[in-house]
Image 1: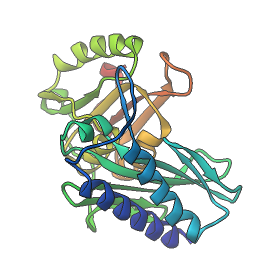
Image 2 (image 1 turned 90 degrees about the vertical axis):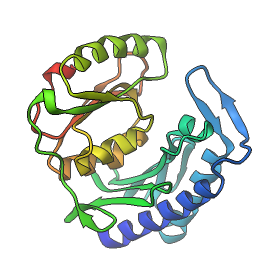
Image 3 (image 1 turned 120 degrees about the horizontal axis):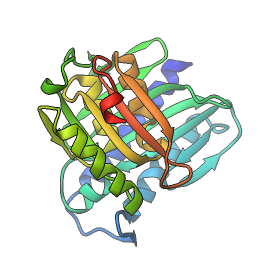
Image 4 (image 1 turned 60 degrees about the vertical axis):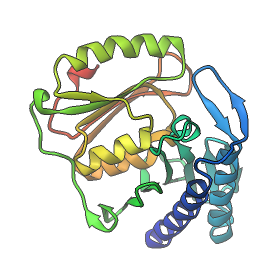
Length: 252
């Protein structure tokens, strides 16, 4: 069963990834222009494509996505971010991805995760009983344990309250690490930690679909993910993900 679910997630992620990659750099239709965010028509179309592939295979499953929920009341709920890094995408910055995860109904435990970066043709996969991989090769978090050697990515969120808190946290972090990076995709931040490219990621305000697949990748790659309710907006979360070797206290 888990292999069928994972194969479906990979098929959907690759199909949606090709679709958004083919439209990268074209004239884009904006559904909503927010102060700190952008919603594109392509977000909706990408999620519709993913949803169709999933529900054609598993018609009783449910799909929880950034662009809305659909499906039935079966045992599996899919968690979808059709374009993670939409602002990057809109401005022509090739750092964005498709993120798909799944969990059993009534459980918060993720059972599979797939992240696909079509610009780099990089596909991360993980599932129950299946080790994390990048393009089929095993991956793991870095072994760096000294903060001064670490590279940390910091996300700056979508409200003044979370931005203010993020600025203070960024100041504390940046004095103690080798380098900080602001990359604009939560899912890829998590994938990069799972691959050993980054050592930690912290953000004040994220949603489940931003990090569901990445959470499993990081944890199965030897890292740790700390989540707590977001203070700036109900229904969001604060996240601190690390390689599992460094303590999280300096980030909190």
